[in-house]
Length: 97
Image (tube, rainbow, N blue to C red):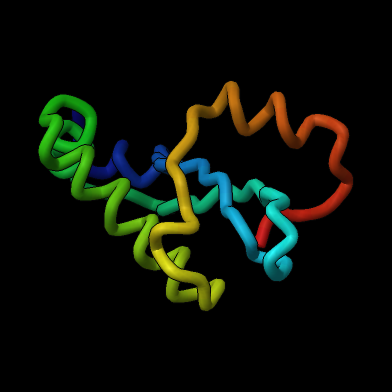
């Protein structure tokens, strides 16, 4: 593939999280997604997709950033699957955080 062809592709990795107690100590959960856009390095993408430790590190990094951005303890943020995210947000009209 010609290097210029990579300019025509935008790769996005999205992590999905369930957040406990974001709205106080109500015991409710909030669901959000966090995306890393414009991944240009095919080697980096391949490592995230094929190497378990790199994938886990990426999810942990996104979890930590989400905790910092939302000012909640990292223990309140649980990674979930896309299917779990859709199941719990399909009726929501709210935007992600």
